[in-house]
Image (cartoon, rainbow, N blue to C red):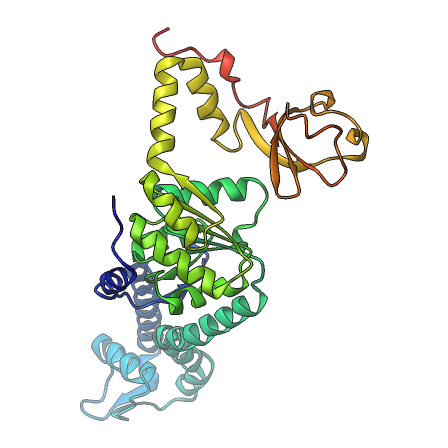
Length: 365
């Protein structure tokens, strides 16, 4: 697949501009309609209680129109009193009725106003509180991980990264779909709704302060433009990107990506391996699932391993990272392990909870 030029990509991105905004994860709250219904019920309870208080002491009230106060007059008086309208046509005349107005009716009036005005106050304070949270979030966010695209690839990538110890507060998801961002915030990640090919959207995600960037959009041309923009904003971040077609991987590396994963090629190779050897396919599938069964771990060399060969360590070493080189476990250039080396090992994640690959039945058994 050939990718369109930079101008064509920019035009395509401009055709689908989405207003960008930051959405932080929040605690689960009741649905708005339930909150409104609950407040209406509370207001009605206060109104009914006030009306019956007035009706119980109706002899202490006087109606200027017809004299005595009945049940309808009691509800009318409660309504105009609680709403602070106060026409004055029904008034307390006895000392007891006036005392009840001071000690009972007035507190009920305050409670009634709090219930009705509470929604307005909540709206007014919510914007200030959200702005304060955003400012605090921006000021404290450092060395975080930005995930571009919260589809299947992006979601799996961030789950894998978090399984190694990264806090959810250190992850920012960018996606043009508001539903995807809602799903991300529901899982505890901060989200930015918008087109990641625009530098303004990436700045809202604080890309310039990020330590690592995962690019997993639906289109390869989008991945190229995002990599170009992200690398321009952050020269030191580690950028890992996914592409569908293998022929686009070199172009993505030229755009600034440090590592490129070909999703279709990787899936095809796993399919072929599973056909040739179902057991080998099961092991590979287990390795790429972080946190279950066997895991691939990147760890430093400990002092007790210095001077040994990779095969003399307790873990199963598959590669040794020395400087900027990745050496196979049997590479003669390794010699003895050094304290500055890093080991790529295969370890068991949770042996008490997961079934080992060799203990699972093979397909067709």
